[in-house]
Image 1 (cartoon, rainbow over the protein chains, first blue to last red):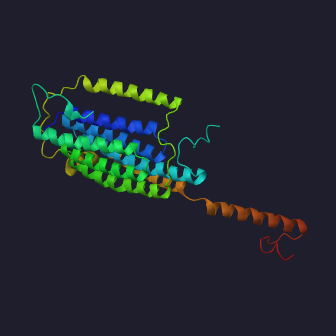
Image 2 (image 1 turned 180 degrees about the vertical axis):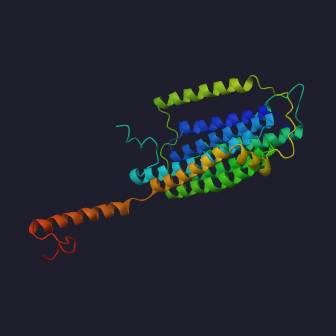
Image 3 (image 1 turned 45 degrees about the vertical axis):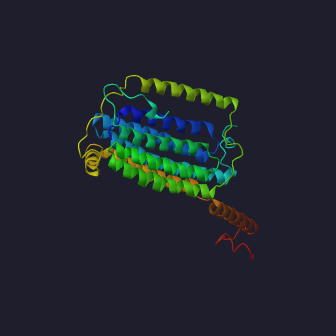
Length: 101
Length: 218
């Protein structure tokens, strides 16, 4: 496909923005984690678009490392969520405020 | 927000078929991403996130990143989403107030608006839409060429990622493990120590073999 790189950049920008909105506006910790995944994917798309435009494959390696990082982040984040649910019976982020007092 | 609405370039205009295909994929990705963050039911959100990742894999393939497209489907749509679905099944709770906009949170909205503004400035200036994308070689983005780069130039980051994954595995198990057995064991040890002290207090002279069973029949 012969699409200029700017279109891909606008799409990645939209994806990152949607993810940010999910992180900032939602109170369900699961949805917040999904928003973080969307943000990481937006960054990946920008990396791949630049990589394609410059004809340099290093962006692919960076995107690969970001995917591995996202897997680790999801595993630890969901484990923390399960621990939070065990101790407080909630996954609402507004109620998880025991370190504020 | 849909890139297909942007005006066609003057000197270079992409083929109409490509534009239509890209518009379909972009609308798919953005639409399912919006569904993900707006649904109240977490299962619906996870399923639309899977759809988003499949659309992104198609876009990666359009950027001739074949290896990354396969990895996206395998790791994201496969592994991470299964993890999400399991956690949703464990903690299925109805949300009371999904979108809570309180005064403090309005600050976050302002920050997001500023982020939008900065991004828009970056995207709209400097990058030209009328430049034809370069023709990449046949081997661009294949497993062989990515593997060559990964195992020669980026060997240390690759090994560091393996260490990170190990730490994530151990951390995940430690954090999410149930502590009931340990609490029970600690309680039993406390009880044993109390019995032991009682036994030694009764007979200060004899202290051979003070155990839980010996404490019973003196």
